[in-house]
Length: 149
Image 1 (cartoon, rainbow, N blue to C red):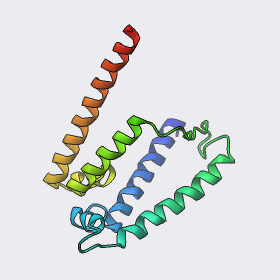
Image 2 (image 1 turned 135 degrees about the vertical axis):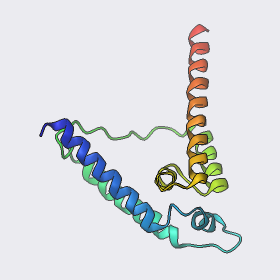
Image 3 (image 1 turned 90 degrees about the horizontal axis):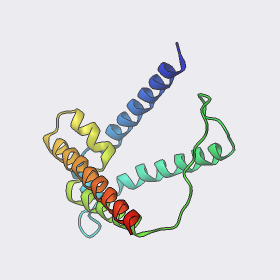
Image 4 (image 1 turned 30 degrees about the vertical axis):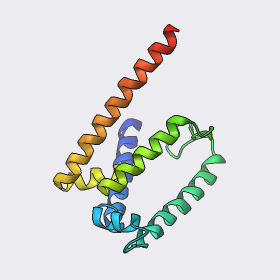
């Protein structure tokens, strides 16, 4: 088996594991997510434990990854860099949070729920893809304007 197929199999397995984790944790249920976000009402803190577990795993994984130069499959290690908090990051976080709060979905769980045939998730994913397209078009126009000046 060549390296490309091995990589694709590992990617598929990790994605499948992630999707199962989202289902088991209840992240694909918009009602549960909205209950978590309803701090002033009937708050459901159960997703805080899911998020805390994810943060803990991420911290351990990044700590281990910083000590490596190659991935487990032999590719170059590319870790994100910590940059300044800027306007695009803040606006993106604001839009992400607003979408999460309005719909009860974030991107990963929305894809899992859409694959299960939920029409609300399909609508959310379509809006998310449209938003990505608007961002790309706007970003390209801004870069062209900056290059012209």
